[in-house]
Amino acid sequence: MKNPADSPNNGLFQKTLNEIETVGVLPVPDAERTMTSGKLMIVWLMASASAMTPLIGLLLFHFGMTDMILAILVSWLISFIPAGLFSEMGREVPLTGLIVARKTYGRVGAFLFAVLFTFVNMGWFGLNTAVAGEVLNAIFHATGSFWFWVIGAAQVILVLFGMKWLEYFYRYTSVLLLLCYGALTWYLFTHFHITTPHATTAMQWGTAISTVVSFSILAWTYKLSTVSRFCVPKSSNTGNARYFLAPSIGIMLAVLLMGIVGMDAQQATGNWNVALLGPHIPVWGLAAALGVALAIIHTNAMNLYPSTVDLLVALNTLRKSTRWEQPVATIILGILSTVLAVLGILNHVSNFLDAIGDVIVPFTFIMLVDWLWVQRRRTPAEAFFTHPEKPEDWMNWPSIVAFAAGLAFSLWGARLAPDLFATVLPLPVVGGLVSAVIYALWRVRPSRVNPVTQGKKAV
Image 1 (cartoon, rainbow, N blue to C red):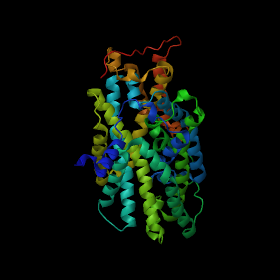
Image 2 (cartoon, helix red, strand yellow):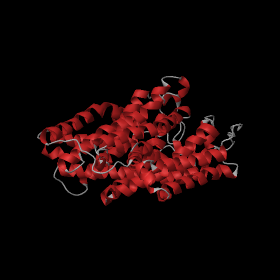
Image 3 (cartoon, helix red, strand yellow):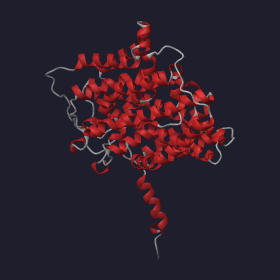
Image 4 (cartoon, one colour):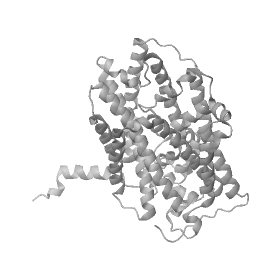
């Protein structure tokens, strides 16, 4: 008699379970490190091409089109080196950034940042889900939270299958996303009077660049190694420059193109959200809805996925990892983040974006100094899981003090020279540089020998 466990349905179920990602915070096996630079760029291009990305056109509307474009380009010039270095970190040691942060901030410090960034990514997930829910409500003439939950559930299911299937999804839906937003842009330019928005106020470079980097590239930077750990290892010496540039180009190209569309939509219709034109487009309205859904899923997958991994870093501080904790954490965080969308997190977007830049930039810059000039890129993957033996392994006070100084500067530095930080210098970036310099002066020595040891007890 045939064993029911051998039935085709059970085989399919088992294959599906096997595709669910369970690597958690452990080093990615070499057999799974196959992502190329082109695929890496598509991942970040699609992740950055959110239905919310055209909002940058509203945030910088009063500066006009020309200065907005220049602000985006300058933001890329400021940020592509930190972004490239952080992405390369994942190719050098196949771990998520907050595991590497254990050597920079100590085990307790990394735990606290992991908890914080779990909530930051939940906030981004909620923001984007709220935008999608409102747009789909408008397109289908609906009310309530039904579409919020549909989008939330779709994202959770996708993230359960991890980076392998996320990359497939981004690659094979990228053309469809471009067609959908192309249709929306075509409708905008053929049915409304478009004139290039001009500046209505003097350009404030510090304010504009701070908005762009906090909205886009520096908000993503610490997450880059979470993806690049699946890339071809750097030791292969294959196209290293392409891998270095791919994430920043992908992120900022989406910001540039969708920012232009958002500013034109704001000028022509009084609303930056070009997707709201969907209900007015015969036949193409459904395509517009599909495009919005894709844009949200693309971006929010890259919010929920790091949020899950960050939470696992925190949990791994307290106990050993278990196989199924990654999918369980994904489901729980996806539900909680969708609740944030339903409760109206979109109403607090400005304060949320400001807080992100103030915290993430100093954190990231200190990590880069530590990785490049203290650890000197020599720390083996297993060393990040060894049992802390010295007080500084639990809490690295030089990095904590440097972070606090940079954060304080970001919060209150404008009081020292308000005109300078409004019109010339981006305050979050300067705050990050303050942190980096303090940490470098404290920890970096020309004759310093790498202190990393491999410890004997794994946590």
